[in-house]
Length: 122
Image (tube, rainbow, N blue to C red):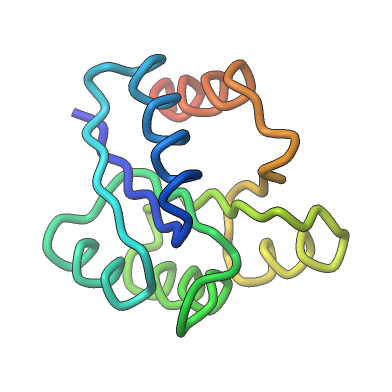
């Protein structure tokens, strides 16, 4: 079974993303974390296949956390999410090891479904 971790401090966005993922992938096992410390605990306990990571988190930011995760779990696919779709953030996301970059404002169900489906086929 495919496992995902949502690392997002906004309860509203986390809920919306979880509902969207469940509607397209009912068997997807989804866990949640609100900050980097909680995310690392969940990853160490049961590594997910996919991580949807907010770039701005309390404490350690999503870029640093991505770098740390990729150093110990290079096979986890990490999708960086941000409300700020600017080239500097996009470039930084890939420099820190993210596999994909999404602007929250332009993310749609179809696009999200296509990316998760492409991961399942890989």
